[in-house]
Image (tube, rainbow, N blue to C red):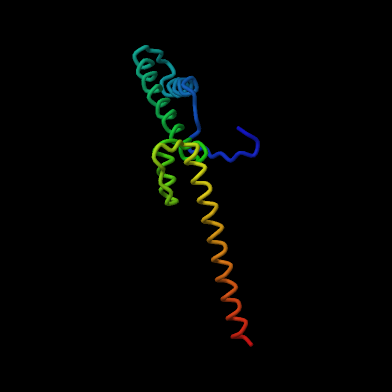
Length: 129
């Protein structure tokens, strides 16, 4: 992790070895006397499926981060800000254009809000006189 970077863990990531170890520990709690190959083989298959789920969740989580979003995930984020991808536009260029548009829109919103507030404050001030 970079210093000062914001990250959020939706699901604690575990390696396949960690999942296998957790499963074996749990099996030993439930069946302390049993050391059969059939159950261990089934548990290993299950662990691999769980690990694959972790990998997919991690990939989806990465796409939620604007700076890492690609392809259709970036297109979706652009559509949220009413900024459609241009023909043959790269992810890097599109991400930069979305960022500029968002900053531009927020500056315009601030200007409108300031004008509105000044207008309202002026009316209130005159009304109170």
